[in-house]
Amino acid sequence: MVELRYPLGSLVYDYLRGILGLGISLVIMQSIGLDTPIFWVILGLAVLFLVWLANTALRHVSRIRFDEEGLHCTPWPKKAIAWNGLEEMALRYYSTRRKRKDGWMTLTLKSGKDKIDIESTLPHFADIVARAAYAAKQANLQLDQVTVDNMDAIGVKVDAA
Image 1 (cartoon, helix red, strand yellow):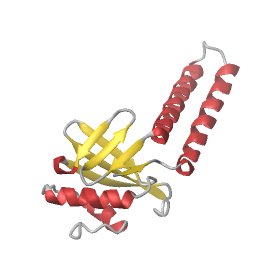
Image 2: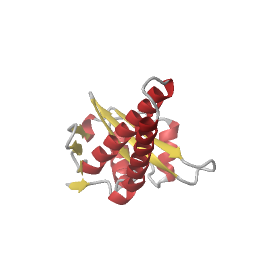
Image 3: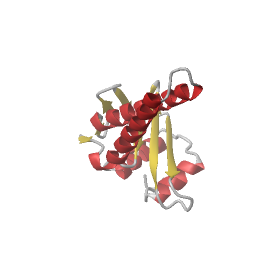
Image 4: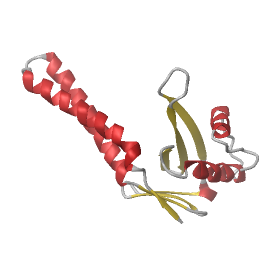
């Protein structure tokens, strides 16, 4: 069993964005009155930045356990997906530039009511994708073309999986 964590280096910019956005929102809210409509818009933005920070902190404390039985995510919410119970798999690429040079991938696995999303900043991401592809093949799951293309882009072959 391998226990993985998102490295702090991959979360630093998310923390900075959240703190900066929340700080600017709070400064603006302090300088305007409650009776203006813009106050409520800025309050909404502050709440969004707070949710962003909470999500980043949750990823920071998350532990992903990966073994031949399945994938387990803790501490909250605790989720587990057994490879032999895999029902859905999707691998998506999100670009930060027009030419698709920079970006990240997200692997989504579903089994029953449990769903685990893993970002490509997690160490051994390609190994997890390869194991999930093997489980999908064993379960005769039909993978969409986007998922197959993204797997090919990171060197995971569906036939070899």
